[in-house]
Image (cartoon, rainbow, N blue to C red; front, side):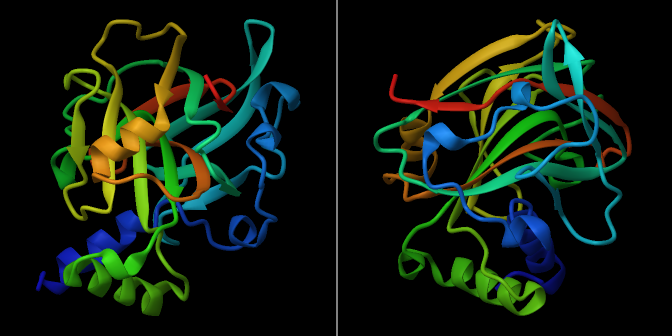
Length: 249
């Protein structure tokens, strides 16, 4: 069994996409077409149903606001040794809408960040997606971690969390297991300095990426979270996120 400190860290990481308070209580979106787009908002503080997603109460929060960029309202994130996200809960079967598309832009890479190393696991931009599934199929270690999380946080962890990240140097398409728990897998969607300071428009087959990362078909999608963090490296990160859309092709 893992040492207590390692298990606790794994629990914290796995809990990233479960927001306490408002997000956990917000009505879950049940239609992919109803996912709110940032471009429909107004400059200022993020509006419902988007809510802050905390790692824990001790972590400094990344600052999020809606701003205009190129004539459109987008989500702006600024992290100063902080870690939190902005997410929305849902219960969506992606069988009919397996494609996910979005835009993002970063001000720069995080020097020294390495997503394969727990003490350096930061990213200027990432999308986190949590999924439901049959937890009886999980290993004893995974079930133990989830049981501990349930006791510590009073709520269940996601069956699986898939992240799309902007990596410093890993090739696009690389799958990077989270250093603390196998129930979180990262896929590199953007990489390196190329395109820094410019909008990148991305589209991925979420269903195929999930199968590649976890070796099985995905269950219902339970949340989407935009997440910028630089707490592990104690540095600065800034990113902008455009609309996140699920579609059939």
